[in-house]
Each structure stands twice: as structure tokens, then as C-alpha cells.
Image 1 (tube, rainbow, N blue to C red):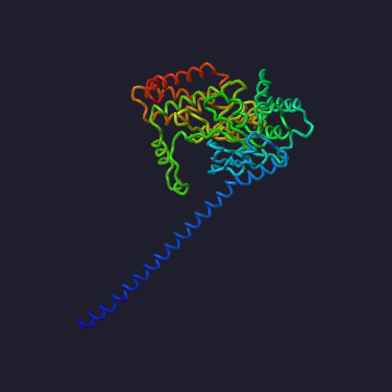
Image 2: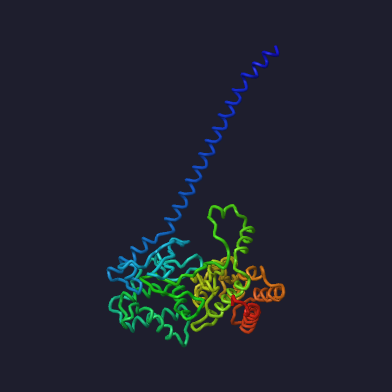
Length: 428
């Protein structure tokens, strides 16, 4: 009997092993198939997203078609369409109607931005500067004199930045940029390109701040495509990781990772001083006050010398334009009175309309962005005072007009504290 049982067990063992191997093969096949499926899905999504967001060739074809037909002209047209020395390289677009590319213009590295649809002004409910249904490059019309074009520009700027005594000086700056080939004459195609670009906040701000060190230089334009100086480092801090990994990284861990990948503290202090100086540049500047409506870290960059350079200024809007558009906006709660991430007003519950005064001035929003950035790794001897000044800055409320003295005092104290600590170092 014992021998019979032993024989039966011996017969069952190979069968068990065979079944086990069969199960493992099926399991391996299933997970292999699942990996291929997920991989294919990821590749498809990435490709679909890329083709939707990155439409640089379409943009170039449209611009060059208009240029060759004589509709538009500008300082970058020949290089883009004839000589092909203006090259669109790596795609940086986050919205399909706002094409952004890293590229080159001859030996010069540059960033090229192109609008895919017709934009006239920003809308409080939109993430980018949207476009109206009117035909792009339809103004000025044939037969318009240079003087008439200047009047058009003056009227447009008056509505955008307000009625100021020096508005004619700004018109002069615009006209000098319009003359792309520097022949002393403004052609109709050049005027059409400039008129389209004047609808964009970033283009206007680059002209207004063209002599300021923290604003990237405008290198050229063609139609509503424009070329600007490349910024070497395109975020205050952080590390770029594949988007699929972003899904599995907790937000708290992501913030910690961002803080680890930053320059040394003296260099962070120098970059921060640059941001405070930029706030000064747009606070009651030569041509009015501008509001910073998105102070995310990826809108600020810096160069190899750790001088702050703005990366994206599309969400910096003239205060006059902002007030004109928001004052008639219907609202139920304060959340209905927001533009971008950071320009917030309150909802008047009696009228169900948004008020026009922003809750926080630019300086408070800049300090909020810099708080963790500056406090991490701060020298012990100034940390307490630095923290105190930053929180006083963040607490600023109301418009800068209402507290100009306090605004200036906090800004200057913060700059002085940082500068004293780094002025003797090589990083300064």
C-alpha cells in the first residue's frame, strides 16, 4: 500500500509542476500584454498631445504665406521664410493657440512665440490671450497714412494703459520697432504686423521695458510671430521629470524636490533681488502700472550670472485694462473675480459685480513666491529678520496707491537685508 501511494505521488508531482509552469506562462503573458498595452497608450497620448500642442510648422506656413503675398512684413520675415536662418527647435507649448519654441536665429539662441488664432485682448476667464473671429492682419487698411496709423496706435494704447502725458513717447517707441528693416519708412505690411502684436500684453511690455535688465530683449518679429532673447534657466527652482512620473509623486514630495534643486543661497538672494527690482519696474513705471497675475516659479528664470530674467510675461496686464474689463463682470462669489492665478478682486454681493481693486499688490505676491525659496538655507544670523520681513510683505493688502509709503519701505528693507548679506561674496 505504501509503495502504491509513493508511486501515485510520484505521478502527481510532474503534473503539478507542469500546471504551475503553465500558470506562470499565462501570468507572464498577461503582464507582458498589459505592459505593451500601457506603453502603447502612453506613446499614443504623448504623440497626440505633442501634435496638438506643437503646431510650429502650421504657424510658419501661415506666416510665410502671408509674407510672400505681401500682407505682412517684419525684421524676422526674411530669415524665417527666405533664408531659413530662423529655426524653430524644441517645442515648449502648453496651449495649442500659443506656440512657444526654443530655437536659433543664425548663431543666436532664441525663443520664438507664435499665435495660432486671432487675439485682441485678454479675457478674465481664459488661460491665454484669446482671439476674436475677425480676420487677422486686417488693420490698418490700404491707403492708411503713417499719421493715421500713429493715431490708431495712440488710441489703442490710451485704452490699454490709460491717458498719460507721455503717451506720445510710447507711440514713438512702437513706430521705431515697426520699421523692421530700418529704412526710415513704415510700410503697410510692417504696420499690419505691429498692429497684430500690439494686442498682446507681452509684446507691449517688452517694448515698454526694453531698457530694463530683467526683461528679455525683443529680437524681431514677423506678423504676430515674435522672437525674444533666450533665458538660460527657465524656472526659479525645481527639476523636470517625465509627466507620467508626476502622476505618482505626492504634491508635498514634489515641493520638497523642487526646493532641493536650487542654486546656493547667495545666488538665490541675488535672483530674488532681481524679482524685487522687476516689481519696481512695473510699479507706477514710465507708462503706467502693470499687474502680475501669475507669479508661478516657471514664469521667472535667470541667466548664468544669476540675474533674474522674465520667462513668460503674458499674464502681466495693464491695470487700466484689467479694471475696465472686470468692473462689469457678473459674479456670485469672490472666486468669479480672478484672472490668471493671482489677480483677485472681491464680489460686490449687492450688485453681483466684481470690484476693481486687486486684493494683493504685486510685491505681496512676489514675496509669497520667494518665501520658501529664500528661507531654505538662509544664514542663521538673518533668518529671523528675513522671515519677519517676508511675512510683513505677504501681509500687504489693497492697491499700491493706498499704501505707497509702506510698499516702498518693505521693498527697500528686504532688498537691503539681502544685499548686505551677499555684497561681499563672489555671487554678487
